[in-house]
Length: 244
Image 1 (cartoon, one colour):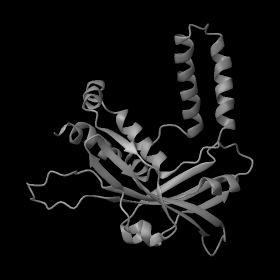
Image 2: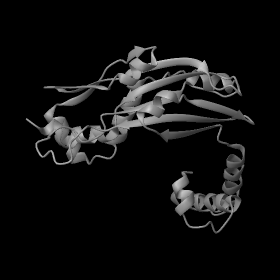
Image 3: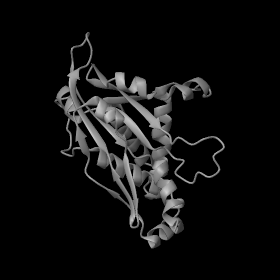
């Protein structure tokens, strides 16, 4: 749970176990009512759901920290393995457009230019959790940009999306430009080209393989991406795509 919620949230009136039991009970009441099942099924449903919750556990926790570009360059992703669970630390920087405070003639984007982020690779997670089942999908920066697009679109009303499709100025995602040099990636920007048929997106991807730290000597492979912000997608749908 985020630290700001822990610091500002109201004190809990029950422990975690009691909270889970209450959630299980209420959820099962709702499901049994919707499915029109007899109340006699409630006890069995409660027991089965409790068993599932007790058996399930979080095996991977990711903690991302926003930093400036200087710290982003010198900080690499790290990962710790404890009792079969992984805790990964990743780093990100949000690049905002350089707009003067009273520049009233500026009509360019005001959403983030890009989100630069350093992550732990899937190969590292699979190697450290050999008994877990993983799919065969390899996520690239392009894939993450598409997820940002879908996330943004899910927040847009249907009539706005209809107008967007009528304009036929969609967003196109191209394969990543790959580099093996940290500085090249740091200096690169997310390529966003505005053509008559839409916005064309290309990310720069950095792949690394290095030692995590002097204490664990854990070999960590990482992936770094220059990513599209969901806010840029919304800005394109609501504003830029309807400009003549």
